[in-house]
Image (cartoon, rainbow, N blue to C red; front, side):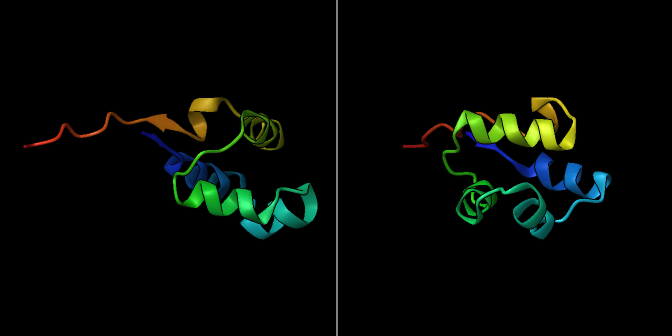
Length: 71
């Protein structure tokens, strides 16, 4: 599973709010919802966030293996 928990820490470090992402940088509210809920996000959105935050992909997302079924 791809998780975006690192995004919120990077935003805090860069002193940029989610509101600012929407208002000042044009990031869609629906995309922020998808990021908050670790849902599918287009790579163009990831690219834009890296550009806005001047960071690497690993500063906003990480891969976490799914837990195996325990049946």
